Image (cartoon, rainbow, N blue to C red; front, side):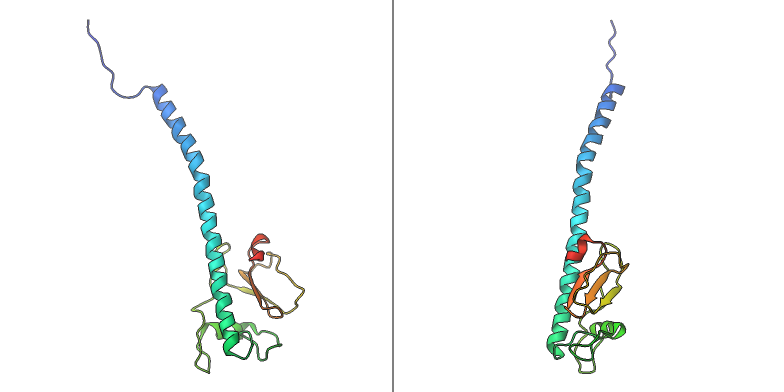
Length: 149
């Protein structure tokens, strides 16, 4: 009597392996997705801290004026704001930033400027950042949830 030994997997065994791999990957993908989302949020917060600290340094070194302000209570000039932060000033100070960072969520480096202390960002302005010269708040502007940072 001859016996044949089979090597390999049967279709049923192969199906079980594929199902198990599918289950394991379904459990792992959300973890990677959450980690990616957390990394983007950490990047956003880090960029905000960097810009805010450099703006504060500018204010300390320039008689309590924000970048782009001719006087402490005046409106902020958009072009001068960027120039003051990213180039060396006439007084030899700076640059404070190499460039305005891109928002990690919408990849924009543009800024909405407002001068009313009652105005808050909505997240639908279509820019990466939001700056209120009346209050000194510099915030994310990519979605309503991230405007709280």
